[in-house]
Image 1 (spheres, rainbow, N blue to C red):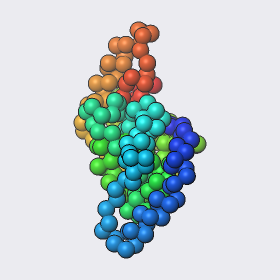
Image 2: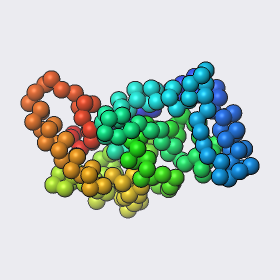
Image 3: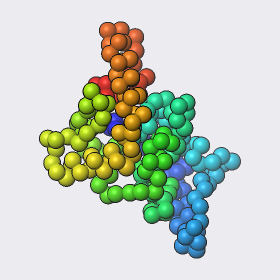
Image 4: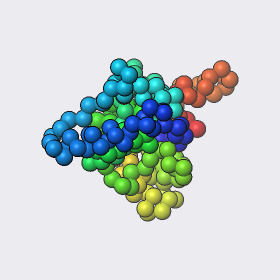
Length: 199
């Protein structure tokens, strides 16, 4: 989970997020089974417009597992960090929205824990919470971290299924590919998945 620098909210979202959030919250009050659908703005679905902003913010990496490029092996989705079913007023709040692969989104689904790590927090730092196992491809809680921070790391790993078997293999494969190119200056770290695993 790479550190993300949150870009400013798009102007149209800044102007309308409260109204749209209250509309969704009211519909949920009337009918708790009401299913969320993105509103439209100037003839386009809001998620389609927002995706471009989020792609530029993450360089088309998943905000949580850092897989790349989204839209090929896994689908681009927009993750509500605090689930819209529990926090309907945050359904259109910019700092609650993240570009996400469908694997991470399906793993987390509508679950939430206040200890879950958020990659755009100013004080978030990968090394503070996690260590890497280059033999297995696993991400582990940093044993040097406080018990509280280790707990937060474990919750994040579990909730986004970051140590799913297929991901371990993929990380190790990407690491080997990166090592082969390290002597070649004609590459960019952002062209790889799992950048935290390569540094």
